[in-house]
Length: 337
Image (cartoon, rainbow, N blue to C red):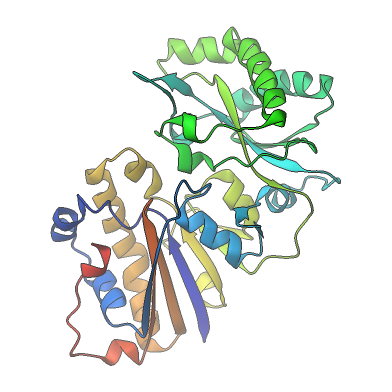
């Protein structure tokens, strides 16, 4: 019998919208999983955190936490099959930064869609500038690159943490940050007139006018626990061993212990598209929650731990076949509020 942990980033709606969304959500299987439990824990997010609650949770669970900061770079490099040379490596995420009324704001990187050809072209333009100043740049996929910068000791937040937020509070600080800003300016100038961005402008797509560095780590980690992913950013998919194109067939996941991260709610939640969020939750009800509930009741899954998060914090709820027999507990979605 398997012990499964299901991580659902952004499955907790923002408190001001939660009551209405819970009333609109038709998810009896999820209600049973969240109501008939053996344990429930809540954890608030820290002040000005450098990662979202689910990212910090995953870093701890996978042994990729460095002094309270998620350090995903080396694990993601290994997942992409890149040489894990010595040094301090950072995840590099191509991004679109725009000027709001009084501050700079970075768009959700999911909205900066890049195919492999465009990603490679922008990467090569940036690589030449990085390597001129002694910083090797490696390619993972169109949205995930890696930069070696041993002397950059500053910490930056994950792209999802800063998405649609005032960047002032998250920009690198300290003496080494000046080198980062100089490199950023040079890459921005190279990309400004790049044919990829000219074509994106013609198609009314957000141009790639910046990069974000984060998730630094100094050494290759030990092997992570079994991790399956669905609809997650490329860096997280690379950390996992099993990338699920869909959730239609879960037999392989349910047959072994491990972690499953389903990230299909992120884009809607970050955009405050609550209709899209509801549709995503209804999809998970049919493809994930109902099959998991059936597996728990049948004893094929011994323990199911669910980790649901928002910007404000996360909850952990654990259920078992025994807990599902607590018929006196009326299934509700109150835990989402």
